[in-house]
Length: 574
Image (cartoon, rainbow, N blue to C red; front, side, top):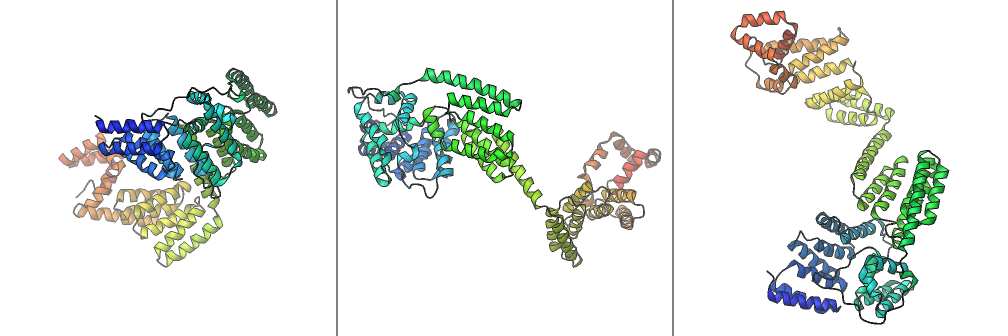
């Protein structure tokens, strides 16, 4: 329950805020905080500090508000706005994103994030250092006022006040002012009448609130200002034009599918004659230009860049003409061009910008595909068989000198230069075997045999790696495959003899736990042991060895399985 003294102080603060007496409002909200640390008090005081341009203090209160009430979206809006004006764009973006997790459709959070991302990507060191509200809301003109009235009914009411209109006219006339003078004039206007800030925000689709309970001042009963032509809506006319434009666009799409590019462009141009301020029709033209050939790519990129730079002007003239979704599609068009030009870094940047506008599954998938294409492209561009051969020869030299670490490094580079050369994997496997990295050696040998299945040396090296891992059944299998290709191969013959000798030795000695562990981890051995016929044989062999021996002699399949189980150390004959 709210503390009575805190509630009284809060009410006085709201009243002072409504009177635009922000300094007094701060005192009352501070008094409220002394009685109760309620998150709304910090939110309201943050709004006061922001109205006075004291953004560090606004950030402190916004942060405290979020800390006290982390599930309240408005707290993130307070904090994000302060961070924006302090030009802490990365922090502001994270703040707005956290708020949007709580309220995905909150317009102030969505617009706030968009402003931050625009500033992050587009503000250059040469840009103005002013922290004024106009940096956030852009140029304000008669069209802007019309948009503000259409989006916020309260602004339409404010326009009946002659004093408000005087200040708006002063705002429109500020385009000739520059630097600190312009900032000073703007701050003065907003301090005199916060409705000016509300109108500027509404022109860009933002909603400026005035504390938790504070309400905007009622419009004075002054003589209404004569309505201007710019303030008169033409919704019906625009709706009709929009419908005609959409029909022309649909016809353009139909012609594009038939590859009648000139006729399609003509339809899109006619649509633009009716509704010039809609990114969709421009973007469709860019799609056709791309299909007409790569010589049009520069024109597509230039057109898209121009559209992005005009997005706010377009929205002011035609609400929704440059919506988040439509801007995202323009970025996607640019990404597509960059991908076709194999400029993957720039394509990835465009996909990321598109995601800040409209985060959807299709764009996320496209981004991942671009990242994979970039990696594949860079690998392909790095391929150079001649340099690969140079590194292979250096690796051989180090191998002969028994410097296996250096040899492996040379083979690594050789593989990067020519990943389709089977010899390189075999050579690196030999070095890895010397370094006792048997699993890595086996992976290289598998890759070698995938590229060249008849590479006999790979089988002999594979047999050796399995031998050292005490996987004698696999070693035998590798040597047998090598001998199937060349019965006279000395390495495979000697390797097989060594394995058979070792198997006989293990049958005479105690159980080798390491050998058994390796065998039990082998899926093939596991399948054998779970085979009903094998399980029955093992039981028979234990209860009646003579009958077990007869079963082996009469069944070739069972004989092969038993040989492998003996080689693996699972069955012992002595």
